[in-house]
Image 1 (tube, rainbow, N blue to C red):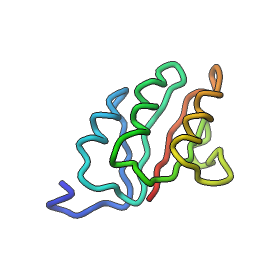
Image 2: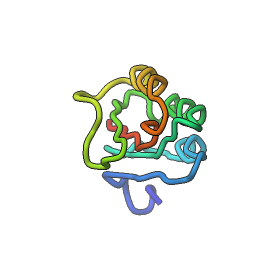
Image 3: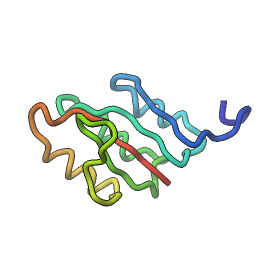
Length: 100
């Protein structure tokens, strides 16, 4: 689709645990993309953060309020990993945003 129509500004990935596979299928990183995460199923999300397409991206995330970013600055993938691992309980649901 990107080859035919061009790179979109934003891609929202909503594939219930298959984010890593979708990211592997992307040929170009858009300026912004997001995907859901759940603290209960964090392993696939953490693997997704290591996807080659996200190399060099910076990250932020939202929890319950989809319009409020939780971090006051965009961080590296490793910093985001640490933050996600420190979340607990019901607060562990949200969306991760990656930008280039």
